[in-house]
Image (tube, rainbow over all chains, first blue to last red; front, top):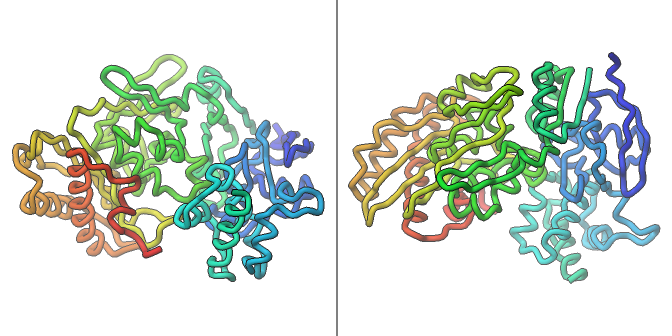
Length: 157
Length: 298
């Protein structure tokens, strides 16, 4: 039997028909199957968080999640944050606070932050640190990312 | 090759009987396969959408935690936090929020790592694993289930469907502490769980189990001599000495065997102290590691 699976992934509310190997990870299926390349693949080992997407609203490392297992789930990627040309407040704040340098971790950071604020609109500094604890950044030293999330929480109040 | 998403336990058990391997969050299976430790099984059945596996049921005598309950839920569920607190302590330390969202207690148990965080809490709380096939189910003690690093005694057609825990008597408390070098995405250097029931100021029962110091999670033997005594410095010293003495740790990149042997005594002592404080009615927030200041400064 072939290991190819014709599946449908619902990404940011849009259904995509993709054909994947059984072992295909979700991050690869998103990047190569749907053309949504905002999701990054860093460590491919569930450590760095660059591949973070939301499955039914909860953050998941898409590098280590099988694409076939994501059928029927609502997948949200970084492309689902902005409203047309209007950036999501998290995106705007991470830019304005200098929380982006090379930018590779940014999509994953944004998705973890989004999930955190959806669940806890007024997080403490410690809660933000825990919420982002699965995301590594090699550039910023994290402080400005934390400031951006705090500012967004205040803004969305 | 096949991949099935099961929506009922019967469907999953039929697939497993036909040779499929169960996958819940995949946080061990997919990660391990991508690391090249093994090939991803050709026949897979996803069990993460089976509602009956994702329940926590409190019965008259025991509580059943479905094998599909995630770490995210364990760390916040009222039944677990109030009555089986050491499990919540452990679940809150696993990986990161995303790991905890997909990782399940059943997966943690059946992965059978000696460094698993929920294992020592389950042991001190007297848990048994419920193993189910298409034709029946049985209960097995965890000391019988775990046979070595990554090894267990369950048959290929058996699915772990629940962890069964006797309900706790009054004046009981439990805690899990872990030595860690950082506060997220960490694996236990060593860890210890304790469950204590008090009779006034004295110990009525005590169990201590150890993480990452032997081929499996092990329970510390010989603590019966503490029953009827207070948990004072002498008692705590005996617990630490017993833990260090019974540990048979290895050296690896995280720590030397000598360091592990020393620090497991410290962790066992701290777990027992925290369990006794909870047994006496004090609330210590989950995970107790934070209250004790273990791990790198934030």
